[in-house]
Image (cartoon, helix red, strand yellow):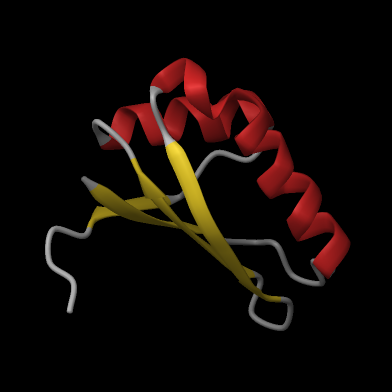
Length: 81
């Protein structure tokens, strides 16, 4: 199933910092059978969004926690067009 997660409070994040955080997830994602697909950030609002494929939201959160940036929200995305 696909999940969109949201991180708050990352005001001022740079492209390099976003890449580093995404790479930290990618490095360990296989341990929870998660595939992080894309990450987006708005440095002004401090919001970061990540799209992933995972068995459940808990697996997504475990990877984010271990990578040092737990998600504030995780939403299932069962429908796409």
